[in-house]
Length: 410
Ligand SMILES: *Cc1c(COP(=O)(O)O)cnc(C)c1O
Image 1 (cartoon, rainbow, N blue to C red):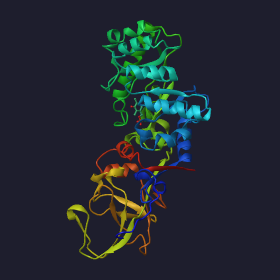
Image 2 (cartoon, rainbow, N blue to C red):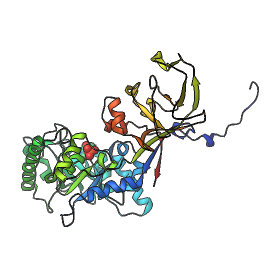
Image 3 (cartoon, rainbow, N blue to C red):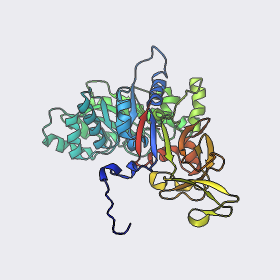
Image 4 (cartoon, rainbow, N blue to C red):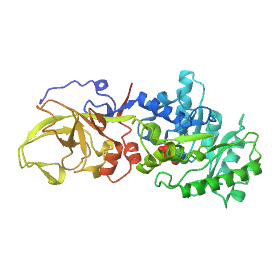
């Protein structure tokens, strides 16, 4: 090549690692997502009081991709819950660009005073969870808003995270009475600590009781014009604790087709009489970079932790822990190739994974591997990858690289 100038068209190679030809990608099933929405809509049967079904879009929509999930869910649900103010604005931008009626959007996470002003103007709801909001009230007043910011009061009923404790509520939330001109309390929420960890909901019921006390206090203190929109149930409580459903459901993981835990699945059988079918929305696939033979006795990967006992046909996959494939799954995981399980050999690397395809394929042509999801009769659930990596599926999916290409399929 010396002395030769090679012309490279930069546009043709994309702008980031997810655009590389040799990069893994995520497939999102729109029909699976709609199916899961229908499961939640149908939980109570006909004639039941209508409740608002909300989808939780935090963590880049549980790693599925906010930009790709939003168009699929926007018309299907009543409330969109995000963690960051910026994501709420993305929803408003999406609606504006398409001339869609704005949905109720609620920022669950922390909001700085200046951000509160922007949210008020965008008609987004925020959560008042501590007395730091007294400062925001002053900033909102100075901003001379046309309408107050709609807020929901977070009551800490036993998670020990954000929210006013029952003990703190009377003093710490007092400022809300004087801030009515800029903070309009329209709802109240709390969050469960262990609904998915147990099949016996004693602690959750104590949280519900505390929530009721907090609600009674707020109604008396604030005398809101409209009844408060009450919401406490995430996926697990929505499924297995009917009395926690109130007016709005904040469903995350299960709208993406995953059970919060095996315990929740067990409880669902008891409480609902059957286990609803949830369909995983996400599949993660990758085209091999090269397929080749290694002679018996060859080592594979960093640390030489694996040695081929026999001649082995390997596929080198251009995916690694940079993309979200957990390194702790080294030596335990398998992927699917042509519907067969292929063990991951040696260590998971930053950008590479080596798998044994000796029996899955009969030649050295490129193969497509499924890292998560179904291929033929076999599937790799997010729960399995989480188990190999000694973590939970919530973490596995939210660690999927934001740079990866995400495609919505039917
Ligand atoms: C994450 C979260 C949810 C959703 O939880 P899932 O178990 O994924 O359904 C709901 N509410 C709050 C406050 C959360 O942080």
